[in-house]
Amino acid sequence: MNMVFNFFRIRRYKKMINTGANFVLQDFAEIVAHTINRLETEGRIKSSLHKEVLKFEFTAVIFWFFRRSEVFPEVMHRSTLDEVHQLYFSKLKKSGYTRDQVQLICEDLNERYRLYDKLDNPDDFVKIGTNFAKIISNRANTEIDATEIIMPIALIEQVKSRFEEYRTVLQS
Image 1 (tube, rainbow, N blue to C red):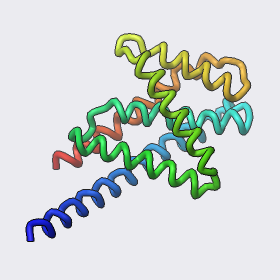
Image 2 (image 1 turned 90 degrees about the vertical axis):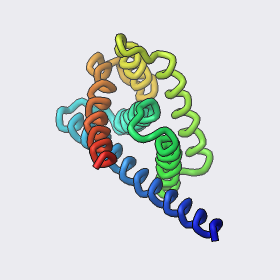
Image 3 (image 1 turned 120 degrees about the vertical axis):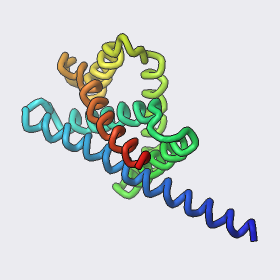
Image 4 (image 1 turned 45 degrees about the vertical axis):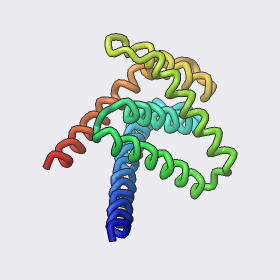
């Protein structure tokens, strides 16, 4: 009897994590889409490649920040982060990306995490912004745009407000 109870409890917990991760990923996608739309309206997107590079790098910064945050209790946070990654990769596959392409994206995300972890200093976020702008320039074959240095900070501010909403929901 106890095993059956534990089975259903674990299953309910996994469903809760999956639902929460879907919500989190959707919020992140909205932030990225809103930012891309704003940049397009302002005429700051130089090409379709530039747009795609920005989308990925915005997503990487947001995932990195979520990974470093303490939005949820530790075990729930790790499980939610894992599920967000799995959902993201699954959406890429459904969008037509091959397994090898998804693996490369996964490796790129891990590379960004290592880079940003190494540079992370609350008093000097400029290093992350500078590296972000360099990566955009290199990957999109564009000149370095100094305004791109502040983009990670603006994204993180948007994400922070969502995190506050999550914390409020958890506390109620």
